[in-house]
Image (cartoon, rainbow, N blue to C red; front, top):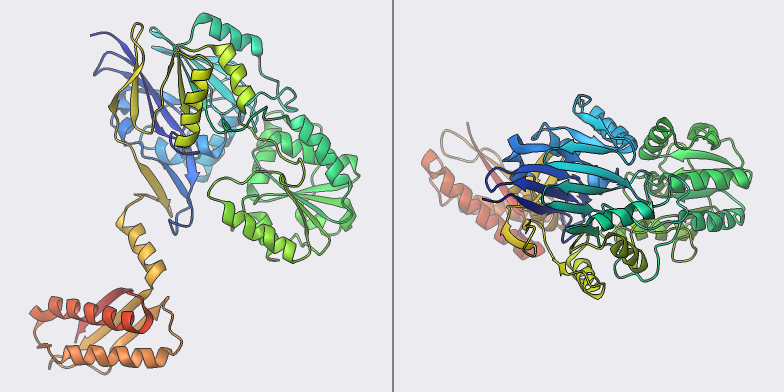
Length: 552
C-alpha cells in the first residue's frame, strides 16, 4: 500500500468559528496525525444556558496514540478557545508562537492545569519537525499579532494552510506579509492551499490598520465629552491605535474589562505596546475631567457580562456614562451577536449617548481577505488544489467559483467530517467521512447539542414548569392539600389558577386506591396528564410537570 496524505476538517467548514482541522500521513491504518487549531464558536438564543460550542474531538481522540501534536495558527478564540476542553483527552504537545503560547498558558492557569512541559514555543517564521510532517510557520497579517500560515511539508508534497489572514501593507504592529517568501513557496510546488473564505463576497481589499488609525484620530479629536471605545481585546494594533490617539488629543486612557487587561499584559510581556502611555486604573479615572479621558472597553458584541453592557446599564462600579458622551464601536458584529449588539446600541442612543460605528465612520477594518487579497495569495502560492474553510457553505461555494476563475486545477468543497485524500498522481478527492459533531459547554460540562438537558431547558423556557407534591397518609388519604408550585406561566390570577388545579388533582386522586404503592406510577402519569391538560386550557401552555408522591 502506498503512503497517502489526508485532510479532514472537524469544525469551521460550514460555519464561521469553531475551527479544527486534521492532517494525516502514512499507509492506510497506520497514519500519523496533527491537529491544526482547536477553536470555539458562540451560542445564540436557541441554546439557553450555553455560551460556547466546539467541535467534537472524538475522531482524533480515538487516534491519540498516533497524534504528533496540536499546532495553533494564532490566538483568536475561534482557533484556540477549546484548547483546555480538548487537550485533557489528548495529552499531546502544543506548538505556538510566543503571543499565542502566552494566552494559551493563561487559559490553562485558570483551569489549574500545569501545561508548561507540553507547550512548545516557536519563534516567528520558525519550523518544527514532526516526522513525517515538517511544518514551517509563515507570519502573515490579520487582526491579531502573530498570525501564521503553515507550510506543511510531507514526502508526498506540500499543503499551505493559510489560517486567518489578509494583506495589510501597513499593519502597525508586526511586519507586513513577506510576498517573496510566499512566491518561493509557490515556486517549490503546492499540492493544496487550505484557505480562509470569510470575506470572499467583499470586493477590493480588506484595508489597513494604518488607515483606521488616521480616521480614528479625526473621529476622537471631534468629541467634546467622555469617549468610550469598544473593540476586540485581541486586536493589539487597534489597542495601540486608541492609546496613540488618546495621547495625541491630550487625554488619559483606562482599560475596562478583564480580557482587555489580560491582552494588554500579555502583549507587553511579549515585547509589544512598549511605547504607549500608561493606562489609569478605572477607579482613578473617575477623578479625571470628562474631556480628558478615554475608556477602552470590552463588550463590542453586546455580551451580557462585557464592560460596555454593564456601563450602559449603569451597573459598572467604576465607569459612569452621561448624556453627550460618545461610544465608538471599533469592531464588526459577529454573526449570532446581532441582537445583543443592537440592544446595547439602542440603549445608548435612547439615553442621549453619541454612538459611532463602522456604518457611520471608518473606525474598523476586517482581518480577513477580500477578493483582491485572495487573488494575490492565489498568484503567489499557485496551488494544484484549493480547499475553502473558515466560512459558511455560501462562502466556501463562492470561493470554489473564484478558484475556477483563477484557473486553480482542482478546487474541492468540503464540510465538517469530509476526508480528502491527496496523491502524487491523481486529483485529490473526498473519499470518506469522519464522525463529527458539536459539543456545548454547559457550565463546565461538555454535552451534545441534542442532549436531553438542553431539550428540557428549551421546553421549560418555552412552556414553563409546574411542581406538585402529594403527601399520602398510611390510611390512603391525602394529607392536607397538595403542595403546588408554578413557574414561567402567564398566570395573572395565580390563586384562582392553583385552586382550580388543586381541585383537578383531588378529583383524579379519588379514582385511585391511594394506599397501594403499586398504583404510584399510574397515579403520577394520570396527574401529569390532567395537570398539563388543565394548564393548556387556562394558559395555552403545556409545561414541564413534575409529580412527587410522598407516603407517611
